[in-house]
Length: 124
Image 1 (cartoon, helix red, strand yellow):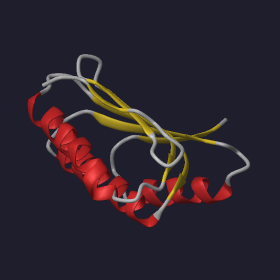
Image 2 (cartoon, rainbow, N blue to C red):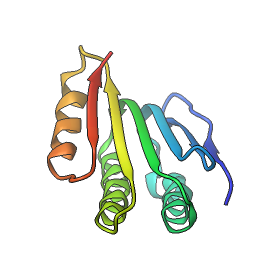
Image 3 (cartoon, rainbow, N blue to C red):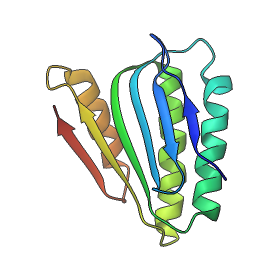
Image 4 (cartoon, rainbow, N blue to C red):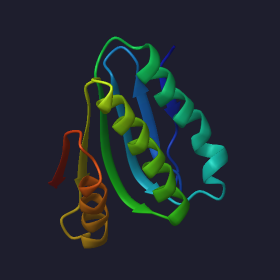
């Protein structure tokens, strides 16, 4: 496989997947018009990485706003990480958020409650 990139815009987060380092970074606002169309290649990349790569996968999030369909995509990604973790693969999430944004902090906490893999939440 190869690295993955989606350029960020006002409504689309910047997404960068580094295959060799095992790092997937997602940052910015996420309220695209068609989340499924936008994020399907990302889900395929995560699945491919978890199936083929020989290194850990670390997901680094710095999201400011997520619409409902983006939340669903994050749930799908976390489900993939959960399955990989249950199979003994090393995965983890670091979610950084603006300390003034309580809504995103609460969302991150809600996700963390459902995950058994390492999940760190940090204010900036």
